[in-house]
Length: 198
Image (tube, rainbow, N blue to C red; front, top):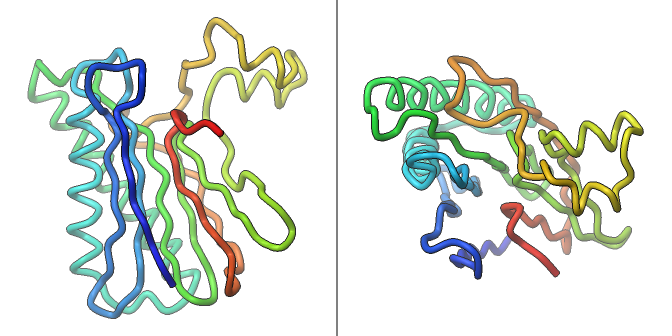
């Protein structure tokens, strides 16, 4: 299994608020993460960097991720811990008040991939069936689309398209989506922030 990580500041912002990487634990299981600091909020880049650093440290100390259930429990517990760390950091440091980050993470083995997300960073799967989005955005416009109030086309130009309903570090507790998919040879998993375009 091959893994590649790349980041780019893009054409809009003066600095890059995205962080991430691919980490391999002592048992050889891969953990990939992308975190996108909330633009327009103070210290979004601090939030995304802290999320990646803490989760990667927990990952390098972890062992015995043998089943999808192990992976789902690990993601839920450790992302919850990191959420509390970010929330407390923002509360104790005035320059970081209001900081937050989106997150999409995956634990990958040769047989399965367990994916967790909060916010609008996404996971896509490319396989023999085609290219499809695996995660759901936790954004205002996505909820409006899901409820039938606007179309997908309307969502692309909606004035509040950047409003998130969930983010890591902005509340004492956070709800995340966790799912496991079967991963077969030749499948490609793409984790990205909302800044990735074709």
